[in-house]
Structures are given as structure tokens and as C-alpha cells.
Amino acid sequence: MSDLPPIPFAEIAGMARPMMLDICRRWVIGGRIKGREYITLNPTRSDRTLGSFRINIVSGAWADFAVPAARGGDAISLGCYLFDWSPVESARHVARMVGHPFGDSQPAKKPDNAAA
Image 1 (cartoon, one colour):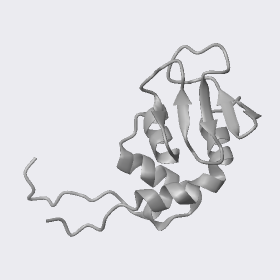
Image 2 (cartoon, one colour):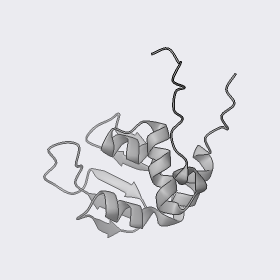
Image 3 (cartoon, helix red, strand yellow):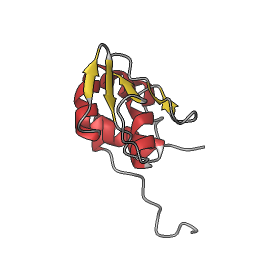
Image 4 (cartoon, helix red, strand yellow):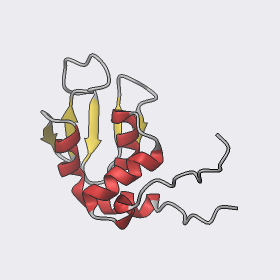
């Protein structure tokens, strides 16, 4: 059993929700707002037309309607998708952006005698 505290994914995602527009503008530049959505080109593929990649700036839900598997529900999953981060790595980046203390934590290091 691990002595590490659980990662507060839901708490971090909740803190990010009111900041989704700022996160979008930082991570995916050049988008536009239409209603509650930030519409932008998908930087993970050859996307030349606005419209299919949308991020709800109120709920944090996002999807690329041109790629059926490309969808998620919060800033953490968006970071995983855009930057190929692990969920823990993405949570740490988002936590730093929203001022959550998990963003200041360092990844656990293996003890020197740990097996590779």
C-alpha cells in the first residue's frame, strides 16, 4: 500500500473550470469564442478549418468532432490530449495554473536502492 496521498484530480479540475478561457488562450492560441465554446484549430493534427475542435469554457468539456475518440471533460484531460502528458503530469500543470498546492509538489523519486 502506498503512503502517498491521493491525487486531487476532481478538485484541480473544479478549480480550473472558471479559468477555462484563460487556459484555452494559453494552450491553444488563435481561437474564437462562440457562445460558451472556444473554437480553435486542433494542434494535434493537420486542421485548417475552425469548427470541429471545441472547448466548453464553462464546463471544461472538449471534443474534436472530426476525431471520434478525441474528447474529454476537463482541463486535465485536455492537457493529456494536447501535450501527450500523463494524467498526473497534466494535473500538476493545471494545478500550477490555478494555484492548487499539488502544482508545487514534486514527483516522487525512487529511493537509490529501488529496483529499476
